[in-house]
Length: 121
Ligand SMILES: [Zn+2]
Image (spheres, rainbow, N blue to C red):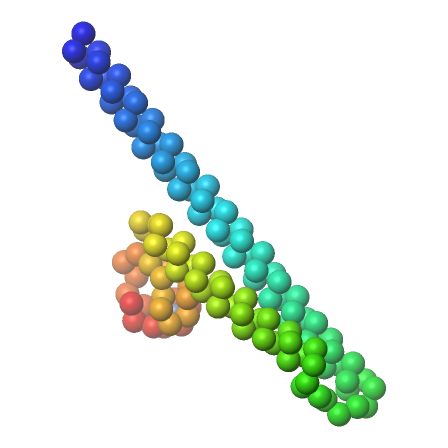
């Protein structure tokens, strides 16, 4: 009876560990999707700015950096900061990942130099 009980508790333990792993995985997937979404938003803002710049040139007007373009630029800076924070938090929850303080990318633990910016880790 003792053996069966200890076997049963082992099964319960590993089921619990599996559940924690799965929950961690889902949390990480959610943050990755959120990061993707913000990166898309930044991409769209860049395109908006590009379009506005082209319109200025098309109309022969002098380019003015006031108003909409500056607003969009500020939004991009804000979103980029948000992404860096999210990546930092995400890398803290992943045992096999580290966060590059220089460029904010998530890298495999044990890597000596960041493959994105060359920063020594
Ligand atoms: Zn880097």
